[in-house]
Length: 149
Image 1 (cartoon, rainbow, N blue to C red):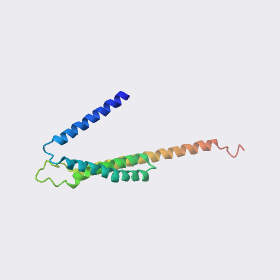
Image 2: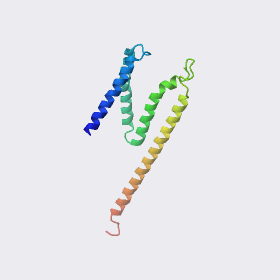
Image 3: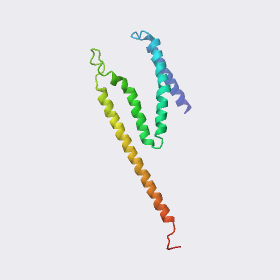
Image 4: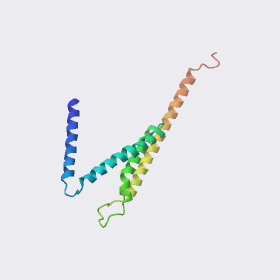
């Protein structure tokens, strides 16, 4: 297990080094410091905004586990797709820049997430009802009847 972990860490370090090398030596990137500012702001937005919102949503939905994960996935997908949705018509004369209907696809994906969340919620409710009925039946079998007293 230790050799596996060491090899994974080394592979990750190599991938990061390759990416940094490409970032520094790419002729299309005029200011690598701008990318550093962008990366740091992404960390700040993630840790300062997105993570607390996800934790708050998880705390509000703590009773129901399956829909919670689907809703967090839907929020994550929305956060990733929102820039493309907001810039969908801004192709600046290049129709290949944003060629798809991102708003349409985001709505389809959110609809699928809602369907999965609804199905998971329904299954969870049915399981709770069955377990409650099973406990009632077991407890009624254990109680002595009035006639046997």
